[in-house]
Length: 135
Image (cartoon, rainbow, N blue to C red; front, side, top):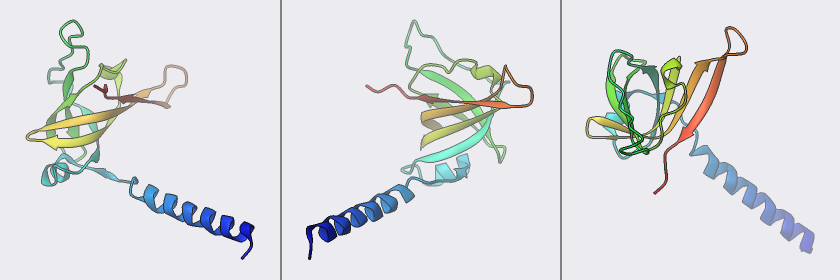
């Protein structure tokens, strides 16, 4: 076999390996109920901010602690704890996507994606992503 054939086979094998590894990262939106059933697995939960419940963020005490309540698409409300700063204009968000795991009765988010009304174009949503603080 020629060296170019060997290199080509190794490259194709690496590409197949990357494709297989990446397919495990794809997920659908789930509910708090599904996340509660398997607390060791990370889920994407979509919902809306529970505006009638309290939010807690005090950067003078702990700038990497933010908690709030969210209602998922099935109507289940849970407390969410995010080890990071409060996203800018969080109260304006139309929809919130959380990535994380259930811990007891709380959802521990490692990432928050907000969809807010765009301030530039009417009837268009602006999407922002916020990651948890790393310690």
